[in-house]
Length: 426
Image (cartoon, rainbow, N blue to C red; front, side, top):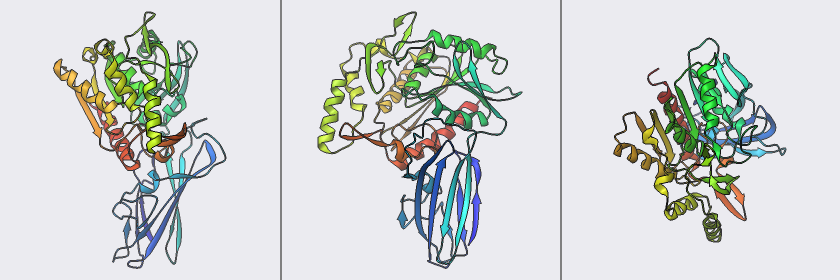
């Protein structure tokens, strides 16, 4: 076998390419991939594919469709995105996350006469990216390069409150030439324990720090928010003129009721200002339980999207709860999937775009919609989609929406577009 590999050592979001020549024409080649996260040994993920060489004895992984395997279409990243857990020691892969060491992926190629092993290193950050703990008027992590004049991105995660997972996105973004500041907005010192009436004044402290800190020292702030963090990013942009770019991934157009985990919390807003709840749409979880039972009886996966749709239809205060994004002074990138099953971001994003058009919004706005994407994390090829797409719940199957292929396609393209958008004008 003669093997050509591209991106054997590369960032976690980059594609790898494998080409194998010198095989017997029409012979079979088995490819097996195994991966463990560096912070979670013993949790093994595996995938495989069987290919048939062409008449020249060649297999190009980007062009060849497996005749058998864990994925079904020609794709150089098929073995990566189709990884499924094959061994577990009971650890939680989203705990104790560290981006200091690369993910190691081992590829075994087996023909009828030969075996070859290839090791891939998937790095989270460039060597010159520093990760600094911040303990000031707020807590967080700053990802940066020394002696740079990089723009600063404030990164806001979703309603799970998982701060550690933000490092998986912040490292690759910082490596592309940005300061990235990740912060919690609930469940931390000085903040509400749950996602309820989070004070916007908290972010004024962060904006002041970004403006005056010797590393960041800028008045222009970029926001990157996912899911509930996307709702928050748009809300902040509508109120603070120092925000100049917003990436809102799977966001909503309205402020919603407080959350207690996955379910509604107190009958107050998720957000507050000057001690008062910001107008919000109440989320009726009686709708969720009814629709959930209906879906379970039908034998189909369920989600929260119908709960949010129907709650909006019932709301008598939609305009008051609508985020007035037309008041912002920022370029905006909206990203959503048509199959989002967490909430109806696919309804929300076009609604936001239409509202901006009606108000003759003067800044750049772009909307990326992906046909078979649901509600994945906004970077590809790290946490296998199979691990997060579906999970047993309440006697049925919960899904975040979309297909494995559709989610990965959306993740990859939208992350590249995110980098382009954030770099525009620099």
